[in-house]
Image (cartoon, rainbow, N blue to C red; front, side, top):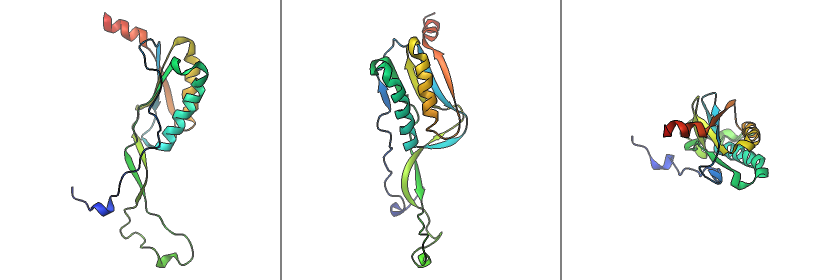
Length: 160
C-alpha cells in the first residue's frame, strides 16, 4: 500500500509506564485475569490508570507478594481532525478536505474474551487481588469479568 509520508507523522508513545509490576516467580497459587466482555478500544492512559489502581490496592501486601502484568499493548494510532469552533473559523479551516487528522494517542483494540490484566498471587492474598482487579475495572470502559485459575492443579496435570 502506498501512502504519502506527510499524512502519516510519527506514532505517539503509549502512556503505560510499566507493563509489569511486582516480582515474577513460580511459587504463586492463583492467576487472576481481567477479561473483556465486549469489542472496544482502550486508550493507553486508561490502561495506565487501571494498572496504577490495581497496584495501589496490592501495595499493602508488599511488592514481593504479587506479579501484575498489563497484557494488552496499545498500538492503534488515534487521530483527530481539530476543528476551530469560534466566530470566523470558516475562513481558517478546510472542513473535511484532507481530514486525515493528527495523531493524538494510541489505543489497544480488544475483542470479547481478551485478557487485559493478570495477577499472580498467593492463596492468602486472593481477596485483595480480586479487589485490585475490581478497582482496575472502574478506570476502564465497559464491563469485565474476573477469572480465577488455580496454578497448582495446572502443574499437577502437566506432570501427570
